[in-house]
Image (cartoon, rainbow, N blue to C red; front, side, top):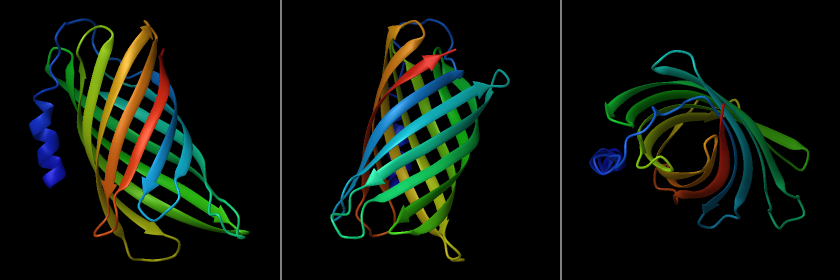
Length: 201
């Protein structure tokens, strides 16, 4: 709840300086991210994300993820593959600033030494996306995820915050960079740094 309150407070700072076209939700994005957690080796992921607006306020989303984590042991590296399906609702709160609510379902399988384990997550998110100038935009979001792993009936919860910036190098191409932090109980936070490119179609 503290992270959520921080997002709402900081969201008031994300107001545009120059008005231009409405924000687009028809986009394809390729990104590379590094997930770090104290006491563990980094997990490097490559993600391909596609969003498509189906009405003036609703969009659909799909994402494919693949990555690898070096273990430094005789068991070999851990590989991860997964996908996300979701939908979102956005509504303007000021010129070129949208409030967004999303719901996602994620399935990811991790494999190592000939064995695999699959996890399922249901993720609820809220956020702000704003265009500061025709070239720059930013976003701030908070999320809550409920996950199960394998055949276990128990669930774990995770809360997170993310800040993202985008810079248009061409009218349809945007360079992206983001920082995120996710926390589950008393475990060390999982911190993420990502970079990518987005194509508006």
